[in-house]
Length: 389
Ligand SMILES: Cc1cc2nc3c(=O)[nH]c(=O)nc-3n(C[C@H](O)[C@H](O)[C@H](O)COP(=O)(O)OP(=O)(O)OC[C@H]3O[C@@H](n4cnc5c(N)ncnc54)[C@H](O)[C@@H]3O)c2cc1C
Image 1 (cartoon, rainbow, N blue to C red):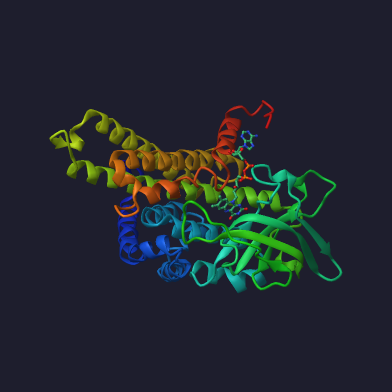
Image 2 (cartoon, rainbow, N blue to C red):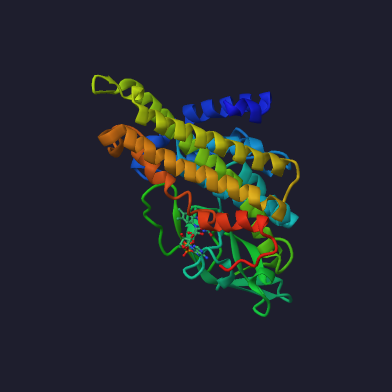
């Protein structure tokens, strides 16, 4: 296995331990999460994982390989759960790096101990891949020491169940959005913030994704992350981190799909022989295994570079490749597994194949679409050419 070459002995032991932890603690809840939209089960497990210390490595300067392993193993068991902790940590990271001590003291420990849930709000009805059209406005009142937010966000993971939100908005209309954007921490109970609706997605059952309305939401100026107008840079740093974790999510789902396929082809008979003896099946298995190993190499390499101190635009290509490769591998493997299982692959009764297929489909869209990843990857190789988006 490529893992032996990529991970230190200590990391390999850590991976085995967390895999066992999730099998023991998350697997028994997985059916409830999937079939009953079991947010409470997710929340209970966030508490357990936090208590165990599994949400802490990602914030350490050299802890992203270990954190990525946590996400890979969580996603192997249940992607909805994993997406919840990935979002929460993607909220914790900018708070840790750019938050004022007073705000950090209130929230950071709770987030990484699993006692609080975080959310990040960038996307809006008219803003998806292109964040430059952001319509949310943040008005600063220096005298009062406050900032006031007006806007509307959609597709926000953990909306309505989060304890705090990082809201991105424009603070300076007179410059390009990249130079006039800021990021503000808004606690869940702040007046003027509401959750008009939550969505009913084809996959990720149990995780909560919704809209966030911000109607004259006023918070102290100390809730601003970094300096005023520094939001875009903060967002890019967060994206590198989130996309490497998404590499882990993709790997977990892809590995699970391959295991289900391998198990099935060794049991199922067709034309008086094991399905696993057929050449066309061997090709599917070979494609899955090769892509998983390639995704693993690229994802662990990106996490390792982060741990070695590579950051910002120097990490963007690695992070985008990890996200694109691993999430496309997840979709590919889930699809192949459904095909290999035939009718069994389509039923909810047989096992997880159909759930993996539905869950994986979100991955090339969330955290920046894979089309956007392709632009970021190619841009690093074509620095002189102006890209026409
Ligand atoms: C389950 C889920 C959870 C999410 N969680 C969060 C969250 O916590 N916080 C948050 O802020 N957002 C969140 N999002 C939003 C997510 O980041 C966006 O959906 C994503 O960035 C794409 O934006 P969009 O949906 O508006 O699609 P669009 O930007 O409208 O894109 C539609 C399609 O067009 C393609 N496209 C767009 N521009 C180009 C171009 N120039 N060239 C080629 N193709 C192009 C895209 O790749 C995509 O395939 C979540 C979304 C989902 C589905």
